[in-house]
Every structure is written in C-alpha cells, then in structure tokens.
Image (cartoon, rainbow, N blue to C red; front, side):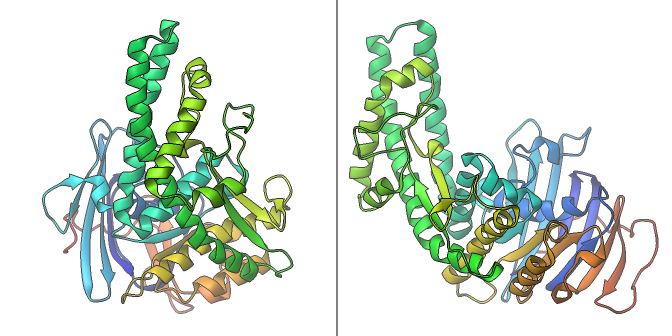
Amino acid sequence: MYVEHLSLTGFRSYPQLDTAIEPGITVFVGPNGVGKTNIVEAIGYLATLSSHRVSSDKPLISFGQDRAIIRGRFVRGTQRTGVEVEINAETANRARINRANPVRARDAAGILKTVLFAPEDLSLVKGDPSGRRRYLDEVMVSLLPHQSALRADYERVLKQRNALLKSARAAGRFSTAHEATLDVWDQHLAEAGARLLAARLLLVDHLRPHVQRAYKELTDGSKVADIVYLPSVSSSADLAMDDDGADALHDGDRERLGDLELPALTDLFVENLLRHRRKELDRGISLVGPHRDELGLLLGQAPVKGYASHGETWSMALALRLASYYLLLEEDHTPGGDPVLILDDVFAELDAQRRTRLAAIVAPAEQVLVTAAVGDDIPAALLGRQIRVVPGGLAGTTDGPGSVAEDRDEPAAVPSAGEPDA
C-alpha cells in the first residue's frame, strides 16, 4: 500500500497543499518549524483519526479557521481509494470515501494502514499507562477497523456511569434510586468492558513474539524483551487497593482472564464493580475497567520503566512500533497489504548503530516516508527521493543522489484544491 496523493486545506501551517507522493522511499527535508511533520501527521491522521502529537483535534485546524480538510488517494495492489476527512472545530468530524456521501469519521478508520515512528514514542515507555493503552487500541483498529466501535462504546458508557457516581457523591448520600440506576450502568459497563478487555488480551498475545523479535533485531540480543497485559479486573477477591484506588495489577490474572468466555468475563467484571462500589462512590469515579489497565514492558525480569538505560528505552519504543508493523504484515497477505511506514524525525534521536539497524529493517517496505532536519541524519539505506520543505510548501526535489528537479526558495505552485480522483 502507498499514498500517491495528499491534499491539505486549513491543516496546521498549510492553507493549501497538494502533492504527489511515490512508492518507495521519500524523505521530506527542511529546517525545524517549516512543516515537515505536519505533512506526515496528516497522513497518519487519515489512517487512525488521531494525531501522534496532540490529544485533541483543535490544534490541527489552522488558526482562525473553523475546519481542516485532509484528502488522500491510496493505492493497494490494483485498487485506488480516495478518502477525505473533515476536521471541525464545533461539530462532529465527517468523512467521504470515494466521493460518496459524508459518513461518520470513524467509518474511514483503517482504510489506510500506517505505522508511525516519532520522538513522542519514548512516552510509550516512560509515560503514563494511558499512552500504552492508546497504542494497543490503535493497533487493534489497524488490524480490524470495525473494532473502533469497541472503545467508543466503552467510553460512552464509562462517561455516563462516572456522571452518576459524581451525582451520588455530590448528593452526599447513596439513595435507592442511585443504587438501582448504578446497577443498570454496572451491567452496561461490564458488557462493553469485557469485549474491549478480551480484544486487548488477544492482541497482546499476538504482539508478544513480534516485540521480542523486533527488540532482538535492534540490539545485540543480550536481553529479551516482553510485554504483559495487566488488568484491573481481578479474579482474586483479596487483592489490596493501590494508592490510586485500583486493584493491584499482576500477570497471573491475565492468564486466568484470557481463558474466560465473554459471559463469564462480564460476570467477573460486575463482581469487581460491586466489590469497589463504596470506594467508587467516595471518589466519584470508576476504578475498575480497561481504562485503568496497564501494558507492562519488561527486559528480562525487570520492568523497562525505571530500570532501562536511555538506549534500551529507545529500543523498546521502536520495538513496539516494529511489532505492530510485523503483526499487520502477518495478518494481511493480500497484494498491497503492507502498511505505509512513517519515520518522523526519528534518526536524529538515535545513535549510529540503531539508525543503521532500523533503516535496514524498514527500507524494503512498499512506501517509507521520512522527515529530517538535516539530510546527513538519514542512513544510507534510506537515501531515496528527497523533497525540500520550505515555509508554506514544497520546493526542490532530488531523486536519490542525482540532480535537483526543482531548486527555488519559494513554495512550489499549488494545484487546484479539488478532490483527488478516486
């Protein structure tokens, strides 16, 4: 799979941008702040409907505008697909597929498959559990786009249940009416949460060997990497609460929960909610469920966070991304099923050995998009077509080590803002 055309309107620093992109390796080169990352961020957004840089959509819209539009045309084998996503400041986002009538934005998720590496990936290892949960959910949707509804359904129910808990807490007492209503929302949360939990447990089982392989390829192989899913729903009634009010998390429960069918997992979820009801009422927030779970990262027997060196931390972050790439390749054998690989300013952060190893792994992909402030940061294996990025647009293009096709300081002429042909 590859992106052959991208059009931006009111996205980040681009009032308008139209550009063709070729399969193989393309490197966007330019000083920091000129908009290199904005281009690949837009491509990543078309795939996942989220940005790797910000948690909300508002910063994606050019200042003073009320919407941004990203249009892309993708080639998969012999099939071309056009997707447009409209990001709105005040209303729900919309999408159009092959110029059809507008649909919900989430209906476009997963049509384009990408794996994006960025400096922000360090937070997958060093940051809060929410980033690791988000990583799992994004991989899950890339594999099975219809699974986007799982997280949306769970978050909707969680929001309603939290509102009820806050209302009961504000009232200063837990009435019979509160109890009856909470019983209903407990069941809804348990059903939605069990589906999401089961999907994540299965995903981690599939990802684990790929994480181990990727980490070994990126390092000297002296340490074995591993991942474990640590649920807050527990089959043990005597687990103590931690400082955040959640059950102590451990891998033993992951093994037991993975063997349960959905009805049994749902019943266990309800039991956990009842067990913690008093604490949840005191806090006014739901303390059990996939929104409290953790993805544990290990090197040998030790957790990566707090024990790994800076280089090991980077290798684990890269291994998580490579693992998702390997899993996507494993699950899709159709022609053109390879995801687009995006490396956003990654090589400046890596030492020479990791640069070389990562470049050798990704170079054979059908399409690799790289951003770099300095061309010298790019390993030899990725010396492909280079596009010079200047404020407001694109300028010089170099096809490999050959001559520059264009060489001017002003942005290249921008074609019509019309949609790309589907």
